[in-house]
Image (cartoon, rainbow, N blue to C red; front, side, top):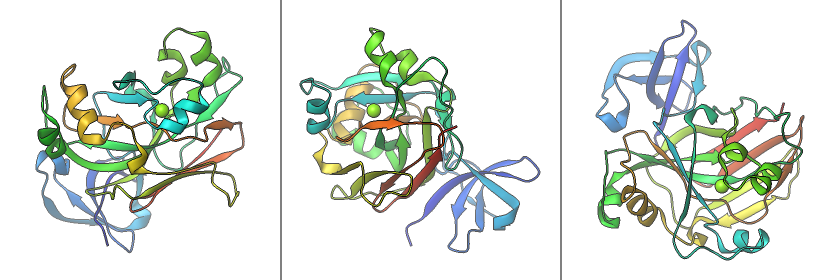
Length: 255
Ligand code: MG
């Protein structure tokens, strides 16, 4: 089985990085694995911890309109270079935690996305160097208050509410470019979003290189690679599940 790298909090409130085993026990590491964390001899059983979001980024750099059909559904052209925005790290919630519907919005949308986890400090790297700086991959939901995004000239408010970045449940080292990304609402069998990773306009190596020309990326930082077509609204009581083949699924309820 692919190694699943997790971050956990024990029943005694201690936080560790580690590897999730098939029986749900966690082999604890002494530091984040992208900072050369090594295995310890500590193993925690499944009833002694909860999963946290798998990293603690200094920033979340997100890319808008990186799938052609999504740009079309938004009524806009694909930008000829990546369109970047930031989400504050306080948007992050773990798998199974709630997305809180803000009072200021009447239209909150899901956006299922592939998230890149940066392993090395990188500044002004080329795409080949960028490829080596991508330590792993996880799943994200770039939750967006669509009405506020339209109303404001920039996206800080629409993208920045607490709980607007479900992330996880774990990190894997590899993902196939042919992997599918799908988003499901409640118990629907038909996905609302369904695409393959290779439908991206700008690929992960290019994105990381491009971002690094502007700002230094630090170990543990997160890059959201954009959402495919099929975005739609969620309301309190809904659950939203983003699945990426070879990684797993990220499930959150709206409260
Ligand atoms: Mg997005």
